[in-house]
Length: 121
Image (cartoon, rainbow, N blue to C red; front, side, top):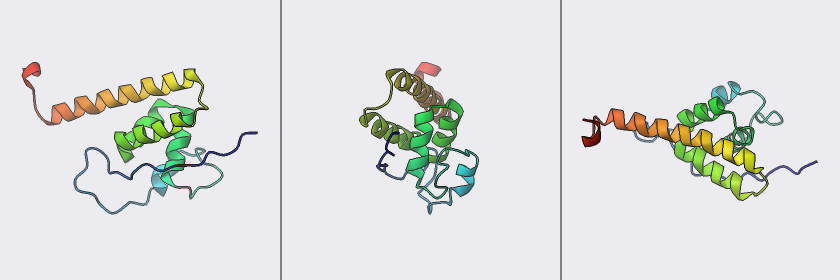
């Protein structure tokens, strides 16, 4: 039996495509779309849910979290998870591949919103 992880927090951020910071929304509806992440405490903090999703490593779940919380928040939590030192190398590789795909998609989305660059014309 393993001991539960101590959840360390990343700075709360708005999604990368958002306007000025708004009041923190009630994320209960968001987490209800991802049942089973933190089954023992439905009122756990967002960091606990994000941590659990990173431990599972499911691409669509991670993408959904990146859209809701921003890629920076997801990457910050991932660095904290890796610092624990108890993730198998194969899992680290899979999650990092997923996060790289998400980061690339964010970069392409931002570039398309800002118009063509010299390299794209």
